[in-house]
Amino acid sequence: MKRIGFALFVFVSLNCWAGNDGDSIRRSRLSVGGYGEAVFSRNFYSDHVSRYSQPEEHKNDPSHGRFDIPHAVIYLGYDFGKGWTFGTEIEFEHGGNGIAYEKEDEEGGEWEQETEKGGEVELEQFWIQKSFSRAVNVRAGHIVVPVGLTNAHHEPLSFFTVYRPEGESTIMPCTWHQTGVSLWGRYKDFRYEAQFVAGLNADNFTNVGWIKKGHKSPLEFDVANKYGVSLRLDNYTVPGLRIGLSGYYGHSIGNSYPRNANGVDAEYKGVVAIGAFDFTYKAHNWIVRGQADYGYLGDAEQLKYVYNRLNSKSPYKHSAFVSKNAYAVGIEAGYDVFSQIPQMRADNQKLYIFGRYEAYNPYASNTKGTAYDYTAVKRMAFGVNYHPVPQIVVKAEYSKRFLKSIYNDEPSFNIGVAYEGFFL
Image (tube, rainbow, N blue to C red):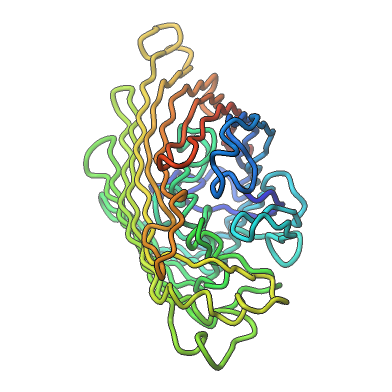
């Protein structure tokens, strides 16, 4: 179940001013913009905590609905001149206030109070950048880790579904942000980005989310006992087509506070390695997007015995095993039917009819013979995206999760409205 919380974050970059290819035309030293989403969902399946452990008892449970504000974002940035820029991003996530209650399925349905961050303000991005040329830019601060399609392109006009693509946002942080240093730029048909960042915290890994919560901290600071590196490379040689490769490598066990000098924390590394491929094709009134992600977690069988996960007074207390492997694959395609109507085409209105398929599993390999078969999901969705103006989209979709035969499938209907643009 999604955590409903509050996050405040800030971001602006050359990418925001110009798009993800890094080309920039600056009209003002100050940039102000943002994006936001409002969603209504009706889920035609049980929301009971034992719906997976006792599926037959909850086969005919009533449906449930919710209104949500997944993300409301403000971009702020400033160009100081001589190649120096500053960027921040402020996000209100799910309309919360920083502290929220949620039922932890992996803890037997226990109610837990959780914080998104040690405080009510979260900076998803906060950095200073020096640009030497189009090909060489250095950024230092709190930055997005662009591993996978969704992290690199997480704005609401970058995907057809009402919520962000489910597979990647289940197994990885989304949006994944860490403090560190980035070197990026564009040369001819290639754009690259290499990062050195604080490591993930294995105390936060779970059986149903793999490393998804690993970048979060309940403290007033991010622990940096261990480190990680990420790399992304995009190619734009074919008109209308972008092909991307990205990856991450880092250690996670022992990247916690207080740091335990003995036992599992000191003996094991908890290597996290992720490889991802993605593409976006936009031409001939079609938009097609796809991705494939595969992850490896070393010493997964030891995580259950890490000190902070056993300590009843710590904010972690995860009793479930974590998988050695996780994966997510997905593809979506949409066609603009208004492109065939001259009046709509002239008015720059678009109506995409789309379909999406994805498969993912945050617990793809059984640890010490322990299985959580309900984590293996195949999901199909189809619907429409209507753009009355380029910066606004109205989305509607019907989707269905297909689980293994012993469980109940999970159909739902979602409708939402979103915007993305700059005001200054």
